[in-house]
Image (cartoon, rainbow, N blue to C red; front, side, top):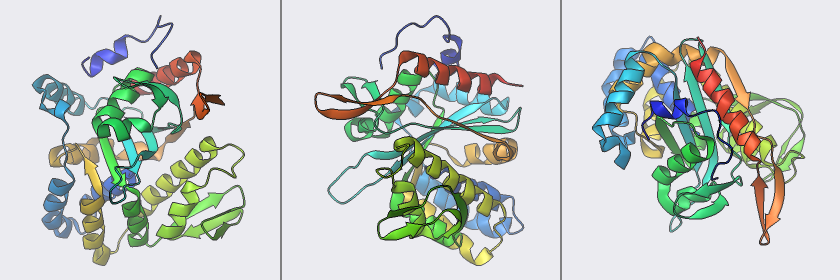
Length: 316
């Protein structure tokens, strides 16, 4: 199905089959527009080339024409952010999945966190947890699963190794978040109130879910808060001595199908969307199926999410 036509089949559907490091990429955009742009530009090309990892679907010339039209006409677009724990000898699973919808016409951004245990149909694999799609078929199958489950287009993706996320936070000099619940994780105690977090602490902060009364939803909220904090820190970033470090971290830990031209376009036409950030959560319930715990979501919730993101994309 082509990219834009997905937006046309919204109503009347009764049943359905059922980054994460964007902050780092936004840092690149912001650095391009900073006072030391010439210094950055010299190093940026190699970094983007290293990060650029197109998918099989990117070989479709019709798809590329549609994407070019979307960017040229400043239409809304969606980016799937995948945070992956990759260890030696283990492909890993997508520990974090966030669908980010950017609307340059309203200068707004919608962040939809997808609980990793959400029970969906994974194409050619059957019903399973949505984060298993990455283990079965890497980024390509993760995108296809999200598109099919929510009946929404994914225009681009960004995948980050979560250890790189930790290094990126440190390169920024840490972040500031507001914490609503006291808890301990990985030997760290996180008190209520305003917290200053380094990279290691931020990674532990977003990983806790077992002691959160909201489970994955609470964890997803912390993930969104950390991403927003990193973006805000990047917006005020001014240390030229750290630029090389950040680009090196990005190049070694981030993969995306966005090339240099796409990133330039996003910086020029989409950079103000972060000024208004909306969040979206999906409502389901934990259930055991064949002795395995899943987050089961009714069809009506899939339809609600699809409609809210579609409305956001079509807003003027």
